[in-house]
Image (cartoon, rainbow, N blue to C red; front, side, top):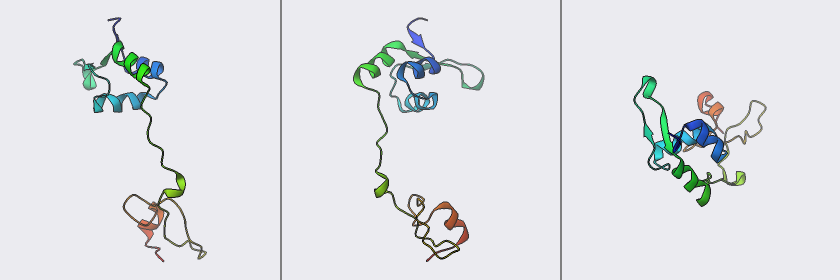
Length: 104
């Protein structure tokens, strides 16, 4: 089994979190990975070649959105000042103002 690594070993090799490796497994980014049967879904065996390929091609990184282009909350605070917090995707308000109905 020296040709395979588990999720924790792959994460260490790629310098990412184990949750990132799990997302890549779900997306098929780590080709050839197999999930062995077992309690709770079993353990993943990831081909060392798939990890080496990612290392040579470059580990995919999430696209970063500049903070100034993120929609801001249009709600108003109790003191009358605009909130300006980060708006929930698809709405003009933050989580706090969505639930309280404090709208301009």
